[in-house]
Length: 580
Image 1 (cartoon, one colour):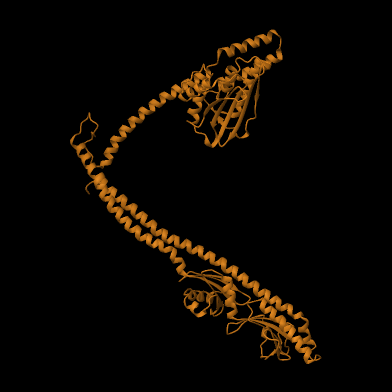
Image 2: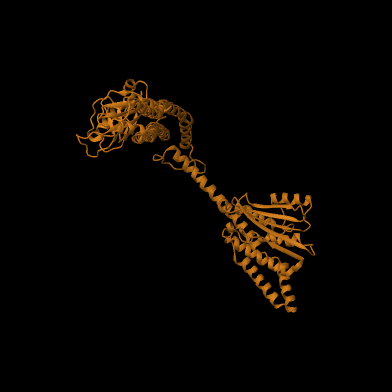
């Protein structure tokens, strides 16, 4: 079995195919993981920027509210009129101002406490209770509005007055300080996170310590988020960066909060990424098993279905060669495998068959060309005789201008049909030829038969079309539909273009056909057995349309409800054009 060259090639090819599919499976796993990781990282960046903006707005709003307190009337009374007020007035002012501080604290849930300090009087007005709290010594070095304590509290302070160059001998008259604790930050971060599967952390920019988290148990959340170790390392190395990205032991994206000097870090659990990719691991195992099963099954099937039959065929060709027979005549086949020998004989048969088919098609094509040329040059004698006789009659009646116009149209008519040959023409050229034909017929029939030509759609004017394919429909209306009309004969020609189909319709108000005649004509048209004497040139026109533009093109016939006959040519032009 393995001595067969073809069989060995089959095994090699199927092995390569199996390895290709296996490699595609492995690549898909890695690529899908990478794409998913990039998508997750982009999502993390967008979310952490959004949450940083929310936190920025909250802090800015709180700071602006603190600044507006410096103009509070009760605060000014406590600062300016303290010595002149009675104890009752002092207590009332403290209560009113404390109540306002409490309103601000309730409005901004991020604030844990809001206190107003009076260093000179060593007293504090608190939002928690309308009493004087115990004053503690404070440091005003730099008059920092944003300050991070060792306990992880964030202090927002507004000083009055604010000294651009701090002086040790000058203390602020008073300052308003809002303290944001990890507890209040936890509620705020948890509210911002909502139902998201990740977790938010607020981290110190210098030391990388976790100040607050969106979870209920901060220490457990930190321990269960191994990606924070890589985050700390990047934070300590980050200098002028405002964004960080981490993809070790999970995914994290951080955004710097420059005012507070802290980082808002959003961590995404690695398990959420691994769960959808578990499918690819299962897929790889299944693909490996499938590849082995396919390889073994194909080897067995190829041996049974190909190798043994080929051995028999080759043995028969070796033993029963005959010059007059169908079998191979060559003696030396060492440089060719079994299928090569079969293909050699098959190709000979195919080449001979193709040669016969080509000869047959060429013969039929020449016959069709001869028929079409015969149709093209087959000008009806009576049309030529009538035209010459009409020129003679106009000359006798001395209608020189009319005769000149008629002769011009007739010349253009015969020039067109004798020069176009088999080449394609533009639709506008074919319509112009029809206009000449209508002018000739109008001179012949006068008021007896009037023709009305509609507008040509702009889309098809410059499209290619077979010559002399539309004029026979108009000619048929004159010669067949109007042959018994003595007066008030009318012919309408309309065109439209829709969905790649150009429709050319010719209608007349003649007697039309009976239902039996119409059914018979349609049947013969489908069978291709209609005679040209029955409807002039219509049969050949239908054949030409179907041969050149495909089965979607052709003619349709119907009687008009108002009386008369209607012929419509449907031609696939533009994108739908199909040259036969």
